[in-house]
Length: 506
Image (cartoon, rainbow, N blue to C red; front, side):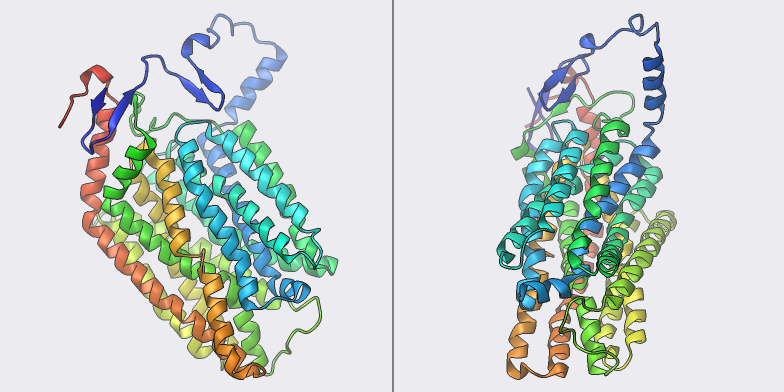
């Protein structure tokens, strides 16, 4: 037994290189020898060819595809939210409850999957999660209008399934790549957040228009999800944790979950960046649900459109917003990765500083949305485009910050806890809160079309102030980033040594 610098006890692994699975572990001694593999049959040759396809790049591509489906499934409901409101006859706050229940179950399950992801076979957990959420989404499309509570419950179950994916998949990419390669692959992976969100609006609206029934919006993504689950099982490898950080030797020590949580709580860069991520989640969660509705109400005020009274409602604004989200997501992630690589040549604190500047700039343009929307829908779309592009700059950079300041054997727990924090303080409550504020303001002039538009705008004005707060948290992250990065590197080096060479510190 030994003790590392942050006070956590290290549990030494055996000298044999074990492969741990959900059912136990397998040592090298149980693996077939080279002689046993000497004679290759046709089946073995096919298997060998299949193994060659399991490259790190292919694995990152498949995981990114799964992440697109993760967010596409999440925002398909937002693309047909107006139809859901009419079908189940619920208010703004009732509709916002769908996303709130989803996020609450997501964040509660995240620490559990983080614990499992640091200790067991990650790709098996990912595949099971995908199959589960796909099945629940498909079944939820058959719920009748008398059982809105059951529809809300189904979104909670979907949140549990999707939590497994978001908590674990980034850590596999983190163990397949390093340095600028890891930044690029994480950029591609996190591009799936805005891309999948935008495709969710487009898929939901298009499927509804093609079938003439919004229920079909929930029957397409499950098929794609099950395909992604099968691809992960076959083509994605299970890399050794920390193998790219210490290529010469495997990390031979592991700490308890309680020690991991204590160490993360003392990691100032990690905590401040998690709070900043919560600010981003607050804004994106509220925007994803309410901006299409806000733009519809703006056009009603301008008398260029009529209020929806019968299903199916117009999906034009959801389609446009979805397309904008896809494009801004692509631009934001690419610009963020390129800007960070350039700024790293000037300062080692480039990662958190780029995030801070982009957040503060985004807040300005998001404020302008509510200024120009009453007069010009095109002007509102321009402000949305610029504001979202700046907001999406920090997705992949935030993940890279985590990879720098957290040791490899603690990353799945760190990703899960960061997800828990960001959802708890962010989009778990923001859609419902915005809807609640809007409903409260509408009580004064319940029948006024203009007031319905203004009340939702006033409620959404909370988002820019939260984004500014997130920018401040990224600036705080920059103050401690170098110290926490160096400490993580030292601990990784310490853990890669044989147990007999690790000194006990008090």
